[in-house]
Length: 333
Image 1 (cartoon, rainbow, N blue to C red):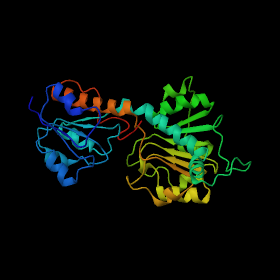
Image 2 (tube, rainbow, N blue to C red):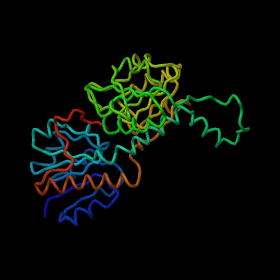
Image 3 (cartoon, one colour):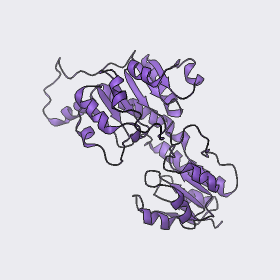
Image 4 (cartoon, one colour):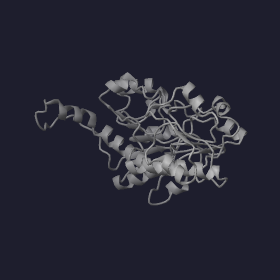
């Protein structure tokens, strides 16, 4: 088959080999493990029938589609989020948008709990002290963290990842609240037993707040200075969704003046740049967008993205096609 396939960045699990085995040998892979410049990208996708894309490198919009040409069938995102794609424009042109929701859920839920525990127990300060050479042994007044067991957890966005986070909270005997645009009976039923609340009420009641909602125009800076002020001074905020859901400047102020106790973050407003106030804050535990970084799950993501392309080019149902009426565009949930 002579359909041209472009992969915008090297990926694990040999996607070109999988495509070739399926009969698609005309594959171009960006040879550098860095994002293409805009000019390079538009040149690379010219004449492509399918593009497998890493979403933090590209803005897939009308300009992109024009550069690719009318023969473009599918853009398959190597991610669960599709906030880099103009979904309405893709739908208008009849271009399929694929994504990889299943591999991302469980490892990101694990990362959420890693951040939650690390922020609550002041792991950053502990790591710095252990490596400093200045540790003098255990002291009764070592910097105290916050207890997790039996506390209240607010999940903002109880989709795939939010639900996986909630399942893990059962073992901590937590009271689980959730905030969503509609009811989610699957998290309200046992064994999770979550209660739906308004955002404002949830922020006031929660000891831990974790974000799993999509990035949309409505959720941009959803967590701002006003909403941070609603939280307990002992509360911890965790974000493994999208960085721009949080107003980083407001969060830096809240961490600095004691509005909240701590934050655990895996995502940032202007990645790969991280607000210097967060880097300097002892009560911010930071990861470099590692939510799905397990060997098994990154390979699974590649397989899913490739399967989407193969199905689309064969005219078969795409196993993970993002629908334009999906309730959570751009979500990691």
